[in-house]
Length: 131
Image (cartoon, rainbow, N blue to C red):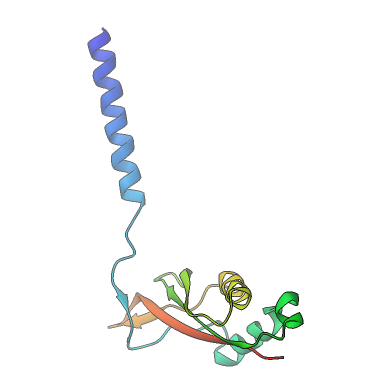
């Protein structure tokens, strides 16, 4: 009976592990250039409006008169979600943190397309901080 219980527990553990591995799908291929680039809802003008309305100049950076341009890289996945945002070019840690905060708050985009199919696309977005 103990052997049977042990074998059953071993099987359940193996099945649970296999199931967990299936839900953690790798990102897959990420394209730099595609037929149709990902698009923010409403287009480029709405993206600029979103940035104007959501970027909050850090008080500490204002006080120290810190300016600069942060370039953030992220992937717009097949479902239009923003994933893996990273600072590609830093201006200052305070500005970098604010740029990442805003990118993470973005709504879903229209995904990029290659050969008629939605694909993962790398996107670079400069965010300028100027007093």
